[in-house]
Length: 197
Length: 197
DNA sequence: GTCTATATGATGATAGAC
DNA sequence: GTCTATCATCATATAGAC
Image (tube, rainbow over all chains, first blue to last red; front, side, top):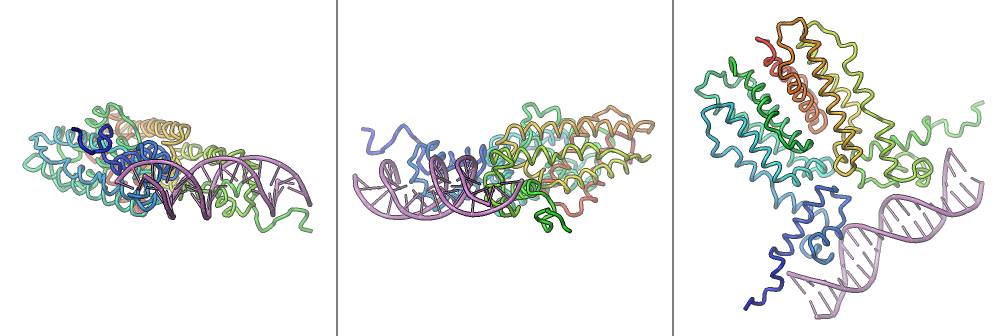
């Protein structure tokens, strides 16, 4: 017996598929250029079902941004990253950031596209940046402790440069092989902190 | 005699006002969220006149991006910028970039918003970045010539970091007082090139 | 919860007077 | 070149059967 479950071929629930479809289409075409009809088709649900789960199209955007929050996964990006060499640690951190951005590219694209029209997106995006500037600065200080580097000197600015470069190459550019740039970037940033690299 | 000129109070021509209105509204709300009706109202022209000058709404976007080309003014950003001190030269260059971005903020916002939906915008944006990475690298080399710096070392990467940071603080952030960050950034970047700053 | 049919309003674009 | 009136289409959202 397969039981009374209606559609076995469509494993996820309708609501999840609607969120998935909206996330993808909002990222590619933008919020306003995406019709609820297109979302319903991509999700393989009838058009009316969207408004059973979400009162308005805007609520659907809010749902995507809150339930698929990139913040959560980004917060774990620095965990279990213990390397004696600060240079290797920073390179690994940068690659993890880029990888996480890649996995959540759709969310990042939505933020970049919509933050000017939707204030709640703007503030979420801004908090995301500031939180990670702080985190990277702390990470830098941790990495450089008990080293020949001078901590606390320009740490905030270096962390900001680190993050801003990752934002551009992770969201705006589609760098397929960022390792070379990341290595060079880390060398340049570390140079300021130490005698030599 | 004031002559036969119809509207003296509206000094610019209708076509120009349409472009102005479209530029502003596209930047604030995005292309798809901006209606031709809203553009006509902001431009103080009847709705039908837009389609006398531009065959479609998309042609209006293309008109804004081609006739208000930010490239032209950005190309002059490095002219008449001769300073014996490389640090001062780079800080001045960065502030000029930020100032030009500020003056053409609407165009920059449109590019950032629409480059994923409109391939021609994407390529224009990409060319813009690459051209200026090259220019900044050349500018760096010029500035560092006959100095104690070692030119050609990481110049491309440093130029890229320079530009990418300016893109983020110029278009994504709305930094009111970027001088402090710019000075720190230049120090960090120059550090890699010389013995000390 | 799922689906169909449809209401209601707005949108890009056109026709044609002046 | 400017302006008005309007069309055809498509959007979000709803009502109600199943």
